[in-house]
Length: 399
Image 1 (cartoon, rainbow, N blue to C red):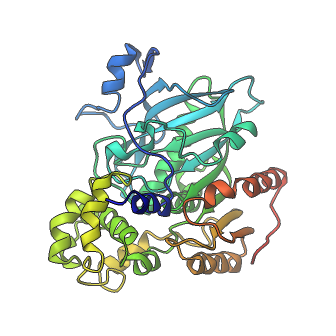
Image 2: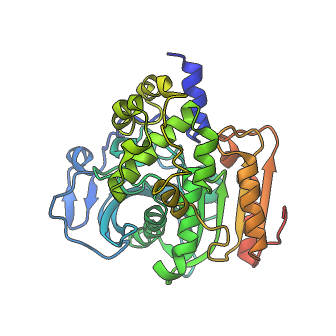
């Protein structure tokens, strides 16, 4: 198996970390309701009882200190209540990172970070990775600006639950409720002012969070949303990529999640070869060499019908693509012009629609930058936009 091919796949989906074993916990861990030995809890933290009672969105279920935070910061691993697209109570895991030292009056502002694709099942969650901080793009800059960072895993990652991959409303609620969970952590001092920040899959999640915020989390002061190479038009994304390994991987995750959650027949759109392999691909993390081994033979032999053309798949892809107008808040959007996954023209179309809606738009394109690096390389421009946002509505550029 070619390591260079696997490396390109990982970068193409916006992943810069190798997911691995849980951090070895040597601290005392705090679970809501009592104290536990850290080593024992490291093994059981993500295990929840079958009869877990429902809770309010954002209510903490479990929290423990997380080692290895950047200098000048502290961190926690969390499990919290959220709701899915239908309003059902669902537990979600993630992490919270906060600067140390005194917080300003009213609490620190919060960045709600939505990560790019790492897989679609529990073990693929960033919070369970060897370095749970590595995928938080801009972490040092954002902490230096005084932000608390709330980073959800999304429903079905971290915890053993059905996948919510590219189910927009569920992901958006997970993002917003991670902020509520951060506010409940003593010592994090998370306030109500929030900026949403996401890359690729996480870009779509952040956009959904912004358009849902007024109705779902009206107590939060969501000031704006920033995204890098967002999966904003799922039909275009899949039609552009379905004949390469990235598209086969995305399709395996998304089609499996939709089949399970919406009760649609996945066999209607997959070839016999894909039907035999996709269930295993859907359970395989992005950086696992097994994903390449399973997916490569399906390139060119993956779908029997174009999902973006046939119902109910066409409607589901549209439903789970965010609206460019959103909730009308200021938008920062970055796109690499060498991106081989999210076509720059698709992002340009989204920008055009966002500008036409009348919202403030800061559009940044970067020549020679591909999908994997656009978020990290746009952090400087993001920081300047955040400074403008703090002072008021940023000027529109790039429309």
